[in-house]
Image 1 (cartoon, protein in one colour):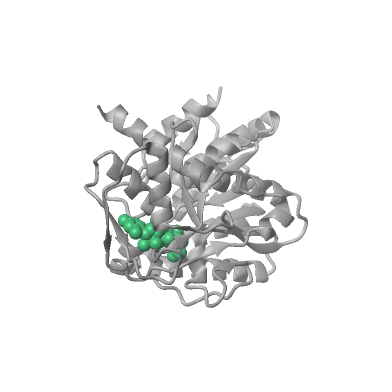
Image 2: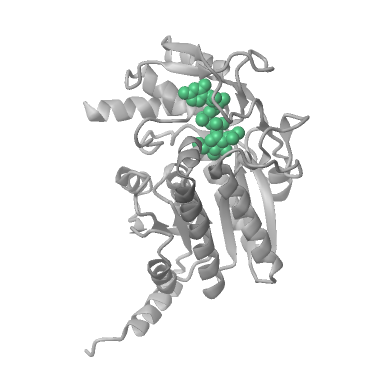
Length: 362
Ligand code: UD1
């Protein structure tokens, strides 16, 4: 048989997909924390995710975990989303029904020290994804945004999607604001595309199987992994940043949402987008609607684990928002999504996951 030119090979790949009715979804950052949980739920909902992740900020074990949970082979392309040429090859090889764009840096403190690293990766990655979506006619896109766009809410601590956007208090936060603005301009240009900006509050927890979860590389910044790593002795103690805030107990209040609920929101989002005819962009809060203070989360952990944690009060962390939680009515009304798990469920799953990680290392 004569060898085929590349374009013919691509053609066969399209037809093969059509024959199999494979519903490919591009998931950038699909080996990461929220990405891996979303990939599992996409597979369980009949989609075939194509993970683009160069693993710079994720663990290859997540990919094994996804395979173990779902029993399916994983499509993984170890590509940097900022590499337009490499990314374009992926778009050429699949006919995507949708894109979920997670790939981005997310450490607030690091973004203050290395702003350009954040602007390059988070902005260029998004621009590349949008450019290729337009070129290859992919119409359904979910973008990872953050409640950080609300900054410190002025009056109400519970924010709706119409609450004012505040000046970002970190370059990381600014990349999310700019990302949303780029998407607004993209849609305004008349492009035939539908986009959801999902504004996550504080995703925590792990898959209930304890096969995948959060793999913080290096010392964690976020509260939940700090709690569980202190409990197993990886960290000596927890410093609670500030005890004199005007909140229920003087510590900051956040909306901790189970990562499985966050993942479900993405699948609902893709399903909903597919049923929309016209170009659109929607902002949506992804939280529980319930605020939990730092001390409340520590107490919940102690109750569940039956273990006293070594913690102490320290100074306030610069740039911290005092109190914020989500109004999630819009997600409920628009796509009948609501969180099915509590912060306590998330603590249980995060704790099981940390113990599994620790036992695996022994
Ligand atoms: C922030 C952003 C969020 C972003 C996330 C990425 C806001 C409101 N949230 O989350 O959008 O996606 O960063 O990492 O801007 N804490 C301690 N001790 C610790 C660690 C944390 O007391 O060792 C406290 C913090 O002061 C805060 C709470 O725990 O009050 C949660 O902190 P963290 O898990 O880092 O999340 P956010 O700062 O809320």
